[in-house]
Image 1: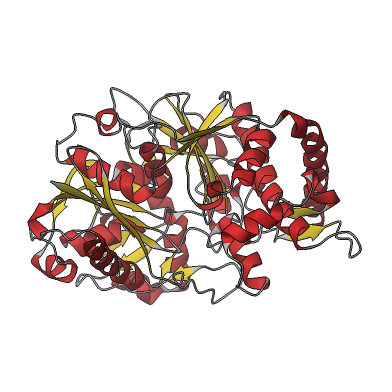
Image 2: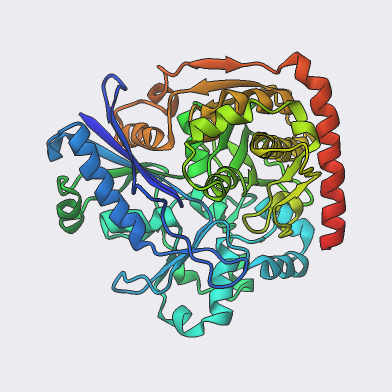
Length: 497
């Protein structure tokens, strides 16, 4: 039996085929060749056409079949991972009513801030563990206020993963974890936060039906099966946002375990059994994939929007001819601290860790006589690591101990230099694993169809392929460079206020 996993990102659609009995990865793909299009009709907006995701899934299955020919009936279950916090609106015929508002869109910041104050800071933090913020619920309110005709046509609102599950099964559904990422879950009542939707004047009937994270979420329709070349009736049996799913993929399921990523965005995701919150909502808490009333599990998420996207931008600015491997090698030629060159990587929308300030990326200390391309490439890596360290300090002040993190050997963690910088600046050991979101989604489907007895059983063969320790000789110089970076950040935030 084969398990099929998809990871629906804002840059690529990834697919993976896993042999269920052995856990062997049979094939893995990322499509399309060029990154998916993101449009920004106004400053601070970020939208995508959901049709890109469905088309990408069809391309991914075709590419997987070219790598590893398989019969449609060989696939025993489908799992989904997806970009978080987005908003897709469909009508009664299942038609998409407007482009999806995706995770890095900033338009609902003021709506969330108003709701936070009006509903009460203490009430929101105690029951939502978050501010209503710039998430799915407040984005839906923005549509109601600014596009009333669109809102009136809406039958259901969906997260990106809910939408692709709808494409597969024909049923509009969501999960508890999904509701929490949209800030629609009351952690105190363990129920949908209808009181928040009522305040936002969102019709309760627009909320999709709940299905389990691991378990039957629907079956492949004949139309979807024909589009994908799969068997009708194949169960869709797992769904999670990309960061909870990444944590699951890395075996991060229990208190004290921490996952990290450095893809388009950078994330630190710590699992705990206590419903903690940051009083300034710079870090957010969501329901983790293996949460239950008997075994409570929460994911505490720190997100940096501008991570891999910064490195992609540099590649394009340098003419697009350098490979990422060549960029990594060139960055290694610059000294620790990049000879005083400093990069703030906040150029991809409002940053939660900065209390939803839209600061913009910036370069500081540039000296035309000293600095070259290598300095800028290394300063970008250092700036990303410094920003994640800034966020990790918030998590540690919430009472969590972070001494070791797990990461997939992908994206910026393909760079030994970045991995060493990250470990040193964050004072953590970094364990690297050969896994990815689509593989985790496939294994999750195995749990959902009952093939594996538990999430832990699905990952029992996991082992790190490399361990990166902090570099002792870098610690002093990086303490100084990080302090300089923090001083610049304070000045930038004050001037932007």
